Length: 411
Image (cartoon, one colour):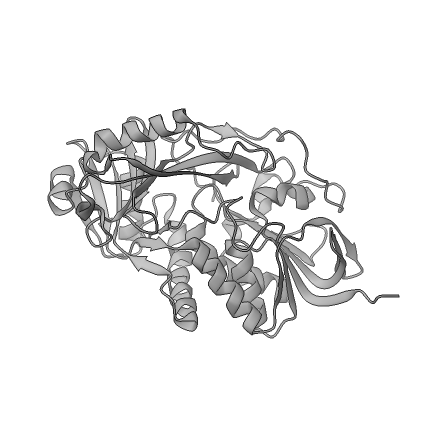
């Protein structure tokens, strides 16, 4: 009889957080297996698209800033380790009406954590960065440490670094079910059967089908990004165009300088507000997707509103309050999970990888994750330890905030 292979930890989902978790565990001398149902990297979830914003001033809530400070440290460590630039500093702009939660929240976090920053009027902003043409009444916070990460290369860097330390990473291998086995777990895939002391689930939009206590709690959402060739590309180079988060009458938007694709990249948070099932999402962008994005560019970034270079779909995976979930299973302490989601998670990948390795190794972490615990939603949900296969329709979920509505802190 073939002997089932045993690992210290199995990580399900080798995207952003999963790849960082594999590396952190391997770096601690653990025997690690990473299982990914798609390619490594892939464009089926939330960790693709050439660039992802990273910023220190955090309007969602100042409590995130301490994690971000550690995240920056770890990004610089991994890029030095692999000898490849993964973190690009451009500065970041958080802008909106003077009394808006985007501007005021960003300013609050900068003041509370003593972050270097400048407050600019719309006129001052466009004078310094001519690609911006924002409404006269707009106020902007410029934080010099903001910038972007290159997500596909980040995943590759973490995977290769983990492999070099002995981690075993499998692409195109889907987890069908898991169950507790004594103090460990048994994991069955469409290829094999594995045993491990610990299970870490970092499967993004598919978390709700792999972890019973997350079923019905997460809301995958279709998102579309545009890359437009600027009329004046020199205004949209990284050295002249900070990444941005912008609240205007049309909604809340985010964008990047030219990088990876010959176009200025941007998107609207919660785009068309399409709830989806991750296995049945409409992946090909449609004309209406482009129209809503191009109208925004024409009004606020007219020098960037040239021919379309690319349109791409990705997914947000929203929690009811749009804050992360990081926790240990309420009935199986050998199982931990995270969903650093709701459209603002990739910048935290490095530090959440460290946190997940902590939880798998010793069931606790030095980082303050009290406000990310599952219990804030009523103690979690219980059900079978055996996850279900993908359903044909998405589960019902709690209403999420509108694009112009503040994320409410729960602590």
